[in-house]
Length: 279
Image (cartoon, rainbow, N blue to C red; front, side, top):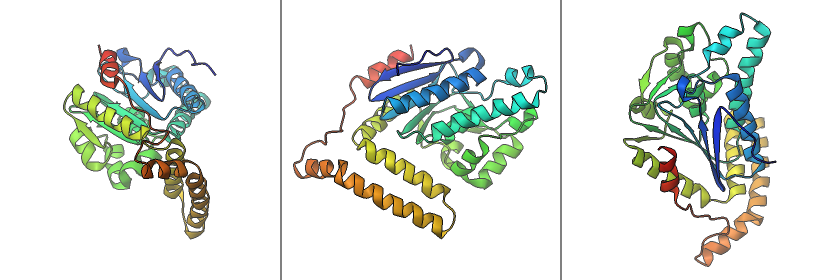
């Protein structure tokens, strides 16, 4: 499958890593139905192309200000359409959450609503100083219907209640404190260096083992009860044996021979590539 054509996002193929940019800067990268559909298609394409790492960012001054309110306004009270519109976003964020490769979100400006949801399904979130986070849906007469489960998983019910019910805006420092993000950058150079370090770390890890580990973490998070946990751990033992007899053998041999494993891929000209994209 060739790279699909997009109008609301841009995709840069630097295989084995890829960069996606939300590209509606004139409306703070608000998520229209078309953008949601393009992201869903893009995530499916990424899986097919076996990328090992994905970087997601926003064009212009913001990462994403949330849903495009014009879509809601233009629906003119059509409940069936509004349900489809909302569920399409939910499907997209589920696809992002279940990507087999690590997802790195580079955040700046406004990270609100759906943008907040995307940050919550990232494997690594790096925010610039000055980034603003909020769940403003209730102040607009809406509810954070599709992102609420992911927000609760990320920061827990206590913090999710505060943000969702009061529409409070928080800064990047507090987002770091409550676990929305993992790192805080004070300059573009700092953010680029942190992303480069993360991508290099991913590319030193075995891709199949990484994907299996990510799936296992999801299954553990979603399990309830001892029987469910036992089923997960039984399957994890099978996956471990598969890994140990495949990539694990290669990794052990590389360790003993003091060389890089076959899957290790260095990142070339990363800083130059990223900086060129910001000019």
